[in-house]
Image (cartoon, rainbow, N blue to C red):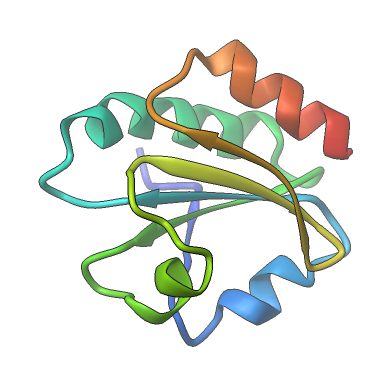
Length: 107
């Protein structure tokens, strides 16, 4: 199955978070074990919230500026944005229900 999550980059990040829909961004890296655990959950949310929210993944090894701007030191870090502002943040691999609650709260 093709990835439903959008690839976030330093270049498209600001356009992405200024969507008229809530935006969930997963900051991850290829070498990160917990990131691999939460990856499929992020893809499920991208599917389930298609049309209601934007779900994106940012590889912190490929993009340094945005993770640095947000002071991301641990991954996975997942942030929820609404109208361009961060409204919620989760650090570490958490159950899908936790991410769903945060996304629903921003809808």
